[in-house]
Length: 365
Image (cartoon, rainbow, N blue to C red; front, side, top):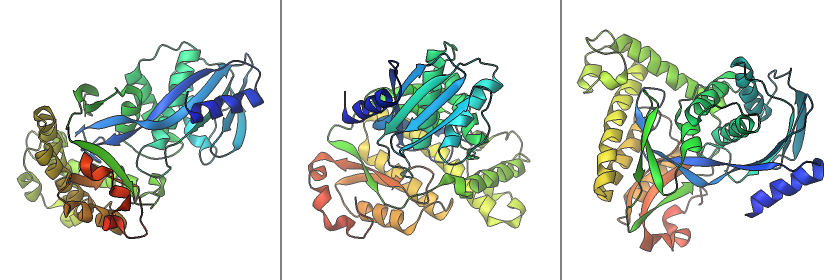
């Protein structure tokens, strides 16, 4: 048992007398396929070793008691009151509200949780919080929802009280991760297949820009709204129902997009990224790290110049990575506006990366 799990259990024992069940909900990375899980695209996430631990037990009352180790803060509610609150509490309450909306009956319980996912890093701390609670409640009260149903429940929960109109990727990856594998997730059918991650001499390295983002600030939702407006115009083309039906950006060129470049740019990025992610699955099977990395650089260029969700710190890190022959590929990861870059780096270079002048700005590793 690691230190975080021990700390969560100790915090539980200091507050409650029952013996809890321990659950682990991982964060996620995403190799490629950014901002297209809400655009009927494909994504390629993987669960990671950083996550959230939950200690949970039913208490045979109507009371629900939470304690966050990381925030050193507690709050309580009852099984008849899942009203909207504030801050981190909304992520938990919104999950419970979704169970209520499904007419799933739950009882009172005690819950302590804590983890090691950096908040605002692009590793989906919110999805890990939601997924861990949903899985625990489903298990303890024998609600018999499968992992796909739980992921969809958590997506609705994040849409509700937190008001982040996210796609399905983060929750799905957290609930369906498999060791040493990535998931190729079809976000239209919500089905997946696993691919072993084996680039032999390379490994994945995340570099934190130290710029925290908050997707609840509105910019994320604005990008989604731009895409919804764009596809509504593109549906004028025969045979186009979703972005998946657009095989070439020439289709985007043929639509004036209400003369607003923001719609054109968002749609152009989505069409190109769907194509890149489809190619990436084949390259992963072929163990072609060079070509895979090239796609990652192309994705960052699109996120920065077309989708406009990057920032100077992220652009700096990716440009420095591009100049280094030991790095096959790099891009911003997550919703953008800060957080981490994801890099595929040769193992020989990884041992010395913390000492490299490559990342010499205040945006340190």
